[in-house]
Each structure stands twice: as structure tokens, then as C-alpha cells.
Amino acid sequence: MDRATVESLRGGNSRAVARAISAVERGGVEAREVIAALFRYTGRAHVIGVTGAPGTGKSTLVNEIAKLYRRRGHRLGIVAVDPTSPFTGGAILGDRLRMQDLAGDDGVFIRSMATRGNLGGLASATSDTIKVLDAAGFAIVLVETVGAGQSEVDIAKNAHTTLVVDAPGLGDDIQAIKAGILEIADILIVNKADHDDANSTVAALEMNLNLKPKAENDWRPPVLKTIAIQGEGIADAVEWIGKHRAYLESNHLLESRERARLRAELELVAQRELMTRLVRGVNGSKIEALVEKMAAREMDVYQAVEKLIGDTHS
Amino acid sequence: MADRPIRVLIAKPGLDGHDRGAKVVARALRDAGMEVIYTGIRQTPEMIAEAALQEDVDVVGLSILSGAHLDLFPRIVDQLKQKGMQDVLLVCGGIIPDEDIAALKKMGFAGAFGPGTSTQDLAKFIREQVAARRAGVTT
Image (tube, rainbow over all chains, first blue to last red; front, side, top):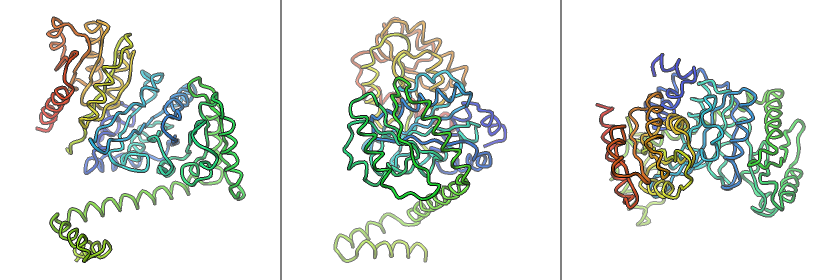
């Protein structure tokens, strides 16, 4: 990435930002060059994650939150992730449909991403895409995950503040005490709060939070009601995002979380890289031979892996 | 440059609200292995061009049934050019009279696909055109 492109990107030029994101999505050398050029300019944006089950209203909520930040003069980047078909590799990226209010506003940059086989609720290039938007000077980056089930929790490692969106009627109170997605919430949102049962959903979430042992200075996630489609409850949600940010700052948690995030990223990329090098170093017939031995029950998976890794490194 | 899935923006400019055809095409292109950004109905030329730019798409597909294509399409093409997206593959579909197709081609549309088009043919057309453009860029 040349100097002029970096400067143009940092000035918020949409074409430069869009192309840099395509490069990090493609991965490989190109992605590394982009990140090498931009990394020093990152670390300024407040990254807000929005996750929750399909159909709870994440995109509509993101649209409303973004509108409110725009009214306050902030420039925003939005990354919206939707799933890739495991069968064809194709994807329908439909989140922009709910974000039409933001179209034509050059203070907002929206990018849709397909997961391209990555698990965990994000695409593997999402964290690099956040870096690109951060370097481009967007003060706030909103990241909407795929419609998440119970274990798509990677967003919490990438965001400073995580909103988990629930809606009435999706499950009883036993769902609320299960491990997983509810645990990563800094703010819990019960959207579609005009529906019946909204209060019992709120009560179930509150009860779950009350059961959690509380240490001093712990953040206790608020449970907020919104009707995103009508813009109701949005100001409250944005106020709580601000409170959470202030909480992180006053307890020096931004620094420690940043380090935890960097450590997790280091481990993840090291794993990917090791895997790539391992696979590159082994020819296919060798893997086939090991599979045959496993099929014949001459070797179990652990022995086969020993053989695979041992041989590559010797 | 490593290959990436073909990215397609499907949009409906203008005021007609009939988006069934656009959705069928979006779904078919998904099944053909493409990443389809669906922006829905009532899009202005500015909205379409801005979305194409931010999403860095290879293809813009426009669906129109209102008859306003000769009015709206040139404005979309202009907007795309202004944003430096002159290389994007343009295709359209919907209700477009045969006598207008020459004008659309002159405007830069690579193909017009009316009712009855096989979605496989459409996917094949897009794949070939994008492959040619990508090859052109790298040489």
C-alpha cells in the first residue's frame, strides 16, 4: 500500500477504504501489506458489537443507533456479517436493506461481509476490517454479527462494548441461564418490546443477572427495552453504551482488554499460520496414507497427528 | 491476486415496489456461489452508486418494472463513473422493451435479462464477464 493510498484512506476516501477491505478479505500477502501500513493508526475507534438470534432486529437497531450517533456528529463505520452457504459458497448479504436511512450519508461507511466458512459469528477478516475503518478515522465502528445461536461469541473479543439483542417469545427462563451468548453482554436489549411477553423476557434476563456472584466494581449489564423499528429506547441504549465506555476508562479496563484482545489475536493468527504451513509442507498422499491407517484401526487420531507434525518438523 | 467470490449488488431503482424478480435473481446468484448484496426497493441512483462503492462489488444488477429505465439508468451510470467505478459489470432485468436494449448497451450495460431468462444462463454470463475483466486487470 503506497503512501498516497494510505493518506487518502486516512482522509476517509470511500474507494480507498472499500479496496483496503477487499484486500484484507482476500487475505495473503495483500492483506498483510494493508495491515502493515495501517496498524499504527488504529486503536482509536470505539468498537461496538451487536449480536443476537436471527430476526431479533439487530440490523434495525444498528440503523437506529447509527442515526443517533450521526445526529451527534460522529462518523461511523458499520460491518454487517451474514452467513456463507456451506454448500455453494454463496451468500445473501441483506443487512443494508434495514439501513436505508443511512444511505447517501458520507459520514457512514457500511460494508457487508460473508463469513466465508468462519465460525464464531464473524468472518475471519472482520477484525482486520475493523482496523481499516479505525485507521480511516471512524470514531465508532458498529459490528453486527450473523444471527447468533448460543456459542457465536467471538464478537466479545473484538468489541469494547457488546450488545446482545433478544426478543420476546424466543425461549423460557431456562434459556436465560444457559452458558454462552448472554454471558458476553455488556448491555442486554429486549427488542420488539411492544410484543406480549416482553416483560417476562426482561424478568428472566434480570433474574439470571441477579444470580451471578458480584465482585466489587463489576459491570452489571442493564436490560433495556427497545422498539427499534419505531426508534424507541435508542437514546437510552446509546446512553448506556457511553456509560460502559466510561466504566472501561475509569477502571483502566480498556488497556487490559486491549492486551487480552491482542493476545487472543496473536494466538489465533499463529494457529492459522501454523496450519497453513503444516498443510503446505505435507503432500496429500501422506494424509491419505494416514487416513487409511486410521480406517484400518492401526492408528488413532493422536498417533496420526504425531506422525504428521513430527515428520514435518524433522 | 487471489480470487474472491464474485460480489454482486442487486438493487431496484425508482418507485415500483415489485421485488420478487430481484429476490429470485439474488437467490439464484447465491446458489451460483456469489456474494449478493441486496439493497431492496426504491433506491436512488446516488444510493445505488454509494452502496456499490462501499461494497466494492464486481457487478451491479438493476431490476426495474416501472418503465423509467432510460431516465434512471444513465444517472446511475454517471454516479458510478464519478465514483471511479467505471469498471463494474452492469446488467439489468425486469420489463425492458427490445427497442431500448441498444441504448442500454451503448450506456455500458453488458446484458439485459427479461422475464423467462434462465438463472443459470445469467450466472454463467456474469461469471464469464467477471473472469474476463479480472484477467484484463491483472495483465
